[in-house]
Image 1: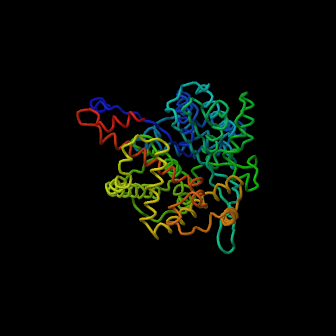
Image 2: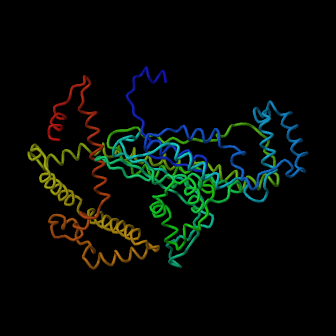
Image 3: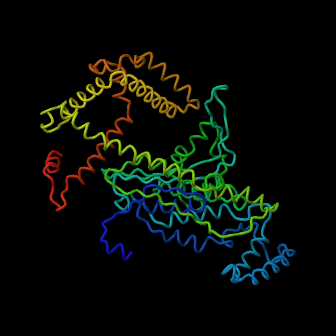
Length: 511
């Protein structure tokens, strides 16, 4: 921090994506709500320090009494002696008498049923969310206006649901999917309107997400919606956002004919212990409006310590435990990080290409537009300039433009089919693609004729009108390119002495 202050860095850090599983999922839920409404995390800290304890979590119906399982006493005494001998190696675990007491209580409590109380865990999660404070829709938030916050919490659907997969023969098969992600978002729009899944109406939804993602198999009973209903009623908390929560997070189950009320959820770490891919996917759709330094922060709760040990053949129980728990829960994130590195290399390559061709593009535009570029731009002029540039590009590309146009039309038709499938809740993607393809042939979007020739007089060309109306990706790419170029101009046109280049001043005057 001293170095930070010496550098006098004017820096704002904004967290806009959170993803977590198990205990990390609990932390992500609480942190997301605190960021969205500028709330205190003290109740969350108290939850971990005071309530994350065997004595608090044990189910009262299965809690060990004084004379429960007396045959365990010799084993526990032997364990205590072993811990004393290895006290120096074990640290606090081998020295604290409270540890012995908690181990005794836990091992003598109920067997062959979850020893911990699911209801108690739900109460803790809901109490922690409520204790953070209210969110009255006021201006309090740690996020700038227009900046969305996304929260992803993984859990495991014990029964799973059927997912349709399109193949060739047979054309459609069904596989059971057990991975489940609960999604929440917050954004305060430019006019001050708040769209949120983390407000007062959603406290029980957030508590359920925290309960479901941390439901360690065998330790807690699986989480169900009815459990949170009962806890919220007992705490006199109205779960107003319940219907929206189900619609947003359980549509896959509903579409598969399953009832979310019957679903049972266990720990998210069973199948998605390190959901970094969810954060990466969300970041891809987050184009910054100004130049930023985006960092992906991954917190490893139990980092591996490099040490030498004998690699003997693992024993029977050790092999089973590792195969069923340790290895799956600690699957490294290497694949996701390698994909991210490759994506960054691809972005750098594209930027190099864009920067390399820019001088030639600028010369072509200047030669094409001539003195017209000296006029102050408005909407009408921009439309005319864009049309002239597109016609020139199509004419110069010749036959290459024909292939480009066909790929573009087919890609946009595929995007439309995807939206139709989502809105109509069709399980078969081939059905929506067939419907859209039939519509395209009937309306004249297909076939694409001589694209390079048709683009010279595009007013009555159906496939061009279709692209202008539905090619959303092109508009997004164009807006991102423009924003990136404007940010680059700030660096290029601001002089070293702090003075403003006349061209930048002229651009500001136009704006």
